[in-house]
Amino acid sequence: MERQVATKTTGATDLAELIAEADSVVALTGAGVSVPSGIPDFRTPETGIWANVDPMEVAHIDVFRRDPAHFWSYYRPRFHDLGDKRPNAAHEVLAKLERQGLLDGVITQNIDRLHRAAGSAKVVEVHGSIETSSCLDCRAGYGLEDVDALFDGVGVAVCSECGGSVKPDVVLFGEMLPAAAIEEATRMAEAADLMLCVGSSLAVFPAAGLPRLTLDTGGALAIVTKGPTPYDGAAEIKLEGEVDEELAAVLAAL
Ligand code: ZN
Image (tube, rainbow, N blue to C red):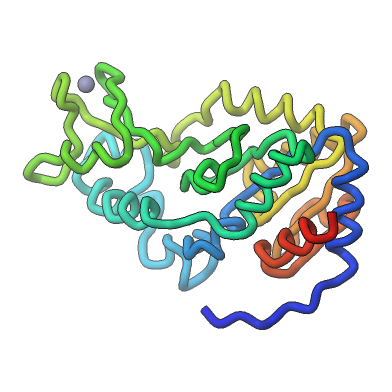
């Protein structure tokens, strides 16, 4: 994708100051942080990964239980596609901020593992991750690279221990969010002096609720996201450029 050379605003400098002054900074990231890695935002019309498919038809837990071959016909290629992706500058800046003691951790809605791949140590994945899959019957766990060997003749991942059905450890439509991750994300949001929201429209739970927790406990918000969010009016800073370029400028200004 061709990109315009962005003119950097004073916004990045202001955000760098906010980060430097805060005692506790937590990042909250959504699909937009992985767009520069070549992973389209599923809500982007036409180009989104759901553009040609009804997500409720494939990525729903009921579909997985009723027709796992149909589920995997969609999800297996996605596994391969996501598994090849690499972190971009936005992921790398967040990992560097953590190493420099300027960021406590990342709460992410993404399942793509890219924050960990970039070197972030504290990552709370509220929608799970493609890193592992589990047997629904005996709970045997499989790494991403091991799942391919489990597929039977009709394209269903079958547990090599018990013959049960193996499901990615990601939250499908119709599934509960992982309680431990939500608890940890809540704790981090409440403890943050500054929540740095990156690449999320902050429209869908739990991302829609976490910034409110930070505000209610006296913290501030900064938003680096294209397009409007419900929290734009409450944020100290809103940056609308490419997330990788904006965060690189913030790091340079620190
Ligand atoms: Zn099993």
